[in-house]
Length: 380
Ligand SMILES: *Cc1c(COP(=O)(O)O)cnc(C)c1O
Image (cartoon, rainbow, N blue to C red):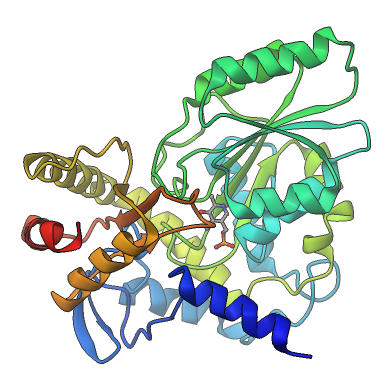
């Protein structure tokens, strides 16, 4: 009965694809305690270093006390607290959209968007490096999907144009990550939105990694925007921003919205405080950008030409085994980076993924670079 699963497991093991989970025993600081050791953190999505701030915690605890720990219902039943409604209004104002809707996670927001909006005659064009949650949302919606080459907007333009020229009258949806989650590439939003306008296609942008860091409000505005509260905002959950019409539909047809308990009042209160804090402290974003420039410059000086343009920095490693070996060597030096391998990236294109935080110092970045340099030959 279990042989099939035993062989699946062995296959993962043999290919070096078996994942293990480390145990975090502190807040996600640049210096964290992980598996009983002090480590230098280069793997967290706490980009603005605010998830652990006591002032934000205290305020969120105070504000959410009234409501208890859990939301105890979906938004359509008893899970719709005044805090959820306040945060939605706040997000609409910040992003420049008519309306927004909270989901319990970014994964669920993407499932909800496509399950609500795809009709039998909808065509979807999706970037080949889009996040797994977009891919899964499209699969569940049974959409007719065409995958286009990564960030190649000329190819996209041709494909969408061909569909219209061939007489497709139904809805067309174009979907892309804004900051790509593995490589850290940033989409040319303006050109993407232009393609949508030219061919009367609906543009959907997943800004999981940029929300909170991207300048607000979004210009130009994609028709539908998804942003996460679980990354730069340091809390959990996500939201979709769009017209009132689309938000009404998501509320009534988005199955991952309808059939799941909403985020805890604490998470929502924390997100509200965090949004205030980010607006009052623009230097956080400046520090993150400085760290990015500094790291890329230092990597270039030791021969790693990184083609990146965000706080997610991918170092190309080739094979999955090499990526894993490098991450292990760095770990021995007390540094946590993440090897990214198939199926998150295509086979043979494994990377070492570094994520920066506003709280990193130049000395900490130097420590990472020195360790990479020392271990490069050992892992070839
Ligand atoms: C992390 C991520 C998500 C999922 O968000 P969660 O809140 O973690 O579920 C969706 N899209 C992209 C691009 C992401 O990186």
